[in-house]
Length: 368
Image (cartoon, rainbow, N blue to C red):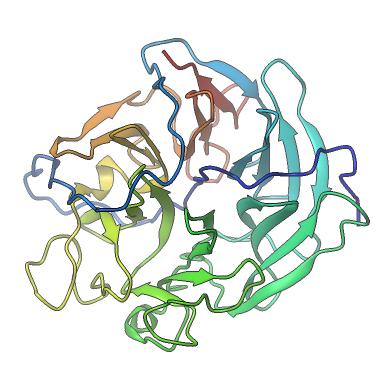
């Protein structure tokens, strides 16, 4: 197994966000509802992470950080401002930085490529790198250190794999726990089974155990009723957002709360049913098929695959806005760096896009 001894020890990541998988479903032939955003409730907790005083400038010409990556999926920032990027189609992890050539630093053993599976989410915590990937018989999470022999340790396994809906997002929350977005693996009833980890958001300790304080003691499940969550993000007040692929009608942005049921497969979008929690914003699947998510200030950024755009969601309420429509093709992962810049990965080589020169690419929009 290759090592990454040339990397500095990794400090805890202040904010992690990463990518998603496109669905094959299309929108219903109904009038498009204006994508208004319900006001986000305030919380009493103080700010949980530092905020850059600068915000991304989407009107600026982006810098191309890296090219020629086969479906970049997970992305996690290192303390020196560079980032680790997961290549879904190979199991390779690259280190990328502005103004330098990409450098392969690790290969995750046992990755099985096919459909929407492969090497998916990445997260960093202390001196560990965490990776979510599709193995021969399941989806699983490993971690490995950036020093020493780099031998991976399996910390969670047994998630159903499928040709689609493999989930894959990893993110450490403000509480230091590992949050995991899983898919229903095409087996829809699993999302409503509290004892099944598929179609859920999981909350784990860094060692992969069910985290203390979870809604059901001894269970890793944090929330349920999800189809395929592949965007996780927190704002400065500690509110958690989950980005959800719809099937035929509505994609969703949800505020994630412990023990809540988000309805899939019983409902899709805003149902007004007290048994389920409604999203704060929804989009037609043709306009989004949303992927990664990140927060900067009072704005949530959501990358869209089929919609080929970046959605900006005002967390104080109002109207979400589509940016960069069609400019770079399918957008899978969005992340905001410590300097306030916004990084985007394209996903035009995933078999569902129209590859362009240099794809797939990692783009960086400067802060202002």
